[in-house]
Every structure is written in structure tokens, then in C-alpha cells.
Length: 320
Image 1 (cartoon, rainbow, N blue to C red):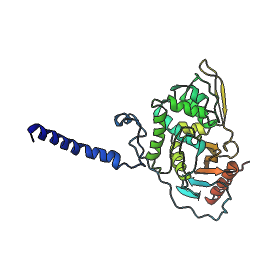
Image 2 (tube, helix red, strand yellow):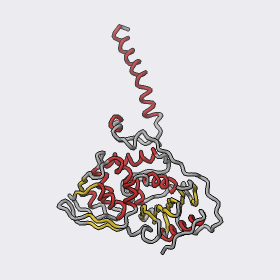
Image 3 (cartoon, rainbow, N blue to C red):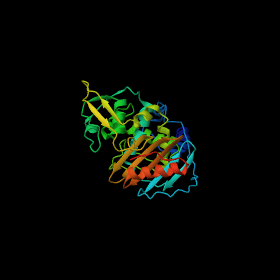
Image 4 (cartoon, one colour):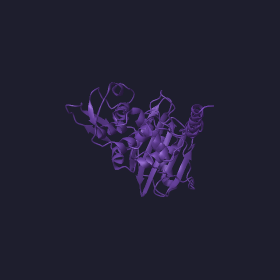
């Protein structure tokens, strides 16, 4: 064998030694459960708040002893947690993966608030305006601030708002959804997955658990803007040359019927059933309660809040 032949085979051998670890780690040993960015690795470094940070908070697994009779609820899954005492008050199927409908929008709001300025202007495109189901009434070509869109996202559960935010983000829609999943991973959640920013059915396997939604909601409430928006009963967006007048009203949650309730979010699809996340501040206690797939979410949430307060030795407020 001549010198050229020896050099040729030597170069093949060296390339194999260099390539094998890369190929084996990227393909043969790949963990399918790991969330991967659709962007090149160097571009993912521009995401300041959702990549590289693990923000684990684990709720206590110990349910407090209570002499109170547990309410009968139709919800497939439920959880009630007192943040003030760091105690679990009630749970039913806490780790059961279920569709979460528009409770998805809590994560949509988190990613938007952490990565876009609140006064950024977004333009409504045709796909967002025509998405259907619950909307805040946006039209093609209208331009609104992120703040106004977030009120529409939460109060009216606007699917048009969620799509406008995701499509108009500096990352684009697909990468925005990636960030939703990466944020869930950073929060230590293993039973949550998003395929769209609205919670509508029909485009993939989108699910969560009441346990994971408790963690997501607690994290979201640390943001003062989010906390303000979810506790708002109604909101007006005045007419400008860039958009119509819009009036938003939060009519499904218990803000006006259960004293101390401060929001957070409702959800419904045929697949998910009636869903509700509620935040209550009463007599020194801060309680988050989550219901998935209930037949009467409003009454069942009131019953759970009453039970929880009594279990903590607190008299529930009068409510209707």
C-alpha cells in the first residue's frame, strides 16, 4: 500500500474517532423526554429567563389532618394548597394528566411577561383574528400593547390574544411554545406539555396536572403585573386609530361572589371539561385551588374553599 493509501485510511480512522461521540450522544443515546429547542444552540442563549435556570418549588406532600367533612366534587382532579402555612389541604388525583384548556394561558402570560416589554405593540394577523372560540374581539391589522392583550388573554380568555402574543413575539410562534415547555421544565414539572398558546384542542398532546398547575400558578403570582391582571373584574381599552374600543369583563371566576378571591383563570373545551384555578387571600392565608374536568366548577370551588378554611381553623367569608 502506497503512502497515499496509508494517509487516506488514517484520515478515515481519525474522522471516525471524532464523529462517533457526537453521533452517539445526539442520536443513539438521545433521551426522548428532553425538551429540545428548534433553534441552533447559540441562539437559545438569548433567552434570559427560561433557559438555564431551574426554579424548583415543591409543594408539601403531607395533607393536613381535618375533622371537616370533605365536599363531594365531580372534578376528575383537584388540589388545594395554603401557601401561608405551606400545607396541602385537599387533593384528588393530583398527578393525573388531563387536558387543561385555557389554563394554558397562565403559562402564555408568564413567557410573555418575562421576555417582552409590557408596552410592546403587537399587530393582529389573519390567523389570530380568525381562530374562533373565546376571543377578545380582535380584527386583522389592529395594533395593541402587550398589556392590553394580557387583559384580553385572562379576562375574556381570548384565543386571539394568545395567538397574537405568540406570533408577534421576538421568537416566533413555534419558539414561543418551546419556551412554554422549557419554562415548565425549569420549574421542575414532569407532567405538563404544551402544543399551542391558547389551550384549544386539535393540534397535539397538550396536558397538565393539578399538582403542576399549582406550581405554575404560584410562580405566576410572584409577578405583580400578572397578579394585578388576574384580580381585575373589568377593563376598558379606549378607541385609538390603531384599534377599536374593547370592553372586557371577568365573569366566570369568583372575584365578585367569594370575598377574598383574587383571580386566576378559567378554562373549558369539550375535551377538558370545566376547569378553574382560584387564588384566595383570607384571614392571613393565601390559598391556591385547582379543578380539572368538573361539572360545576363554580360551586365546587366554593365548597373546596369553605372546607379548606374550616380545616385551617378559619371561618369562611359570607358569599353567594
